[in-house]
Image (cartoon, rainbow, N blue to C red; front, side, top):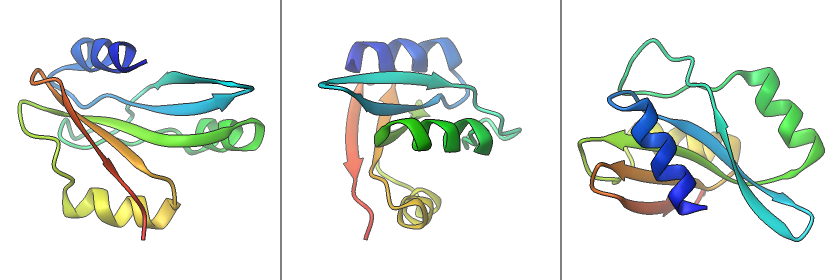
Length: 104
């Protein structure tokens, strides 16, 4: 699954990628989402698509990438993670590192 996330980050670079890790029965899988943000250093998912996944599955992580910088969460990441109440899985690309931000 981590390889799928890094592949998606590579495809979206230099923009941020975004997606979801969901629990699908006993399996976890990565769902790539379209980043609809007009700012290449931010991500935004379609709210209706996000809500539809939330209604039919358990979202384990909200995933996004930081291009050409470390995976340390920004203040914006922290605030949004806390607002949605779902952990953020942040990857750095091309460094291929990651961190998990838990909501408070």
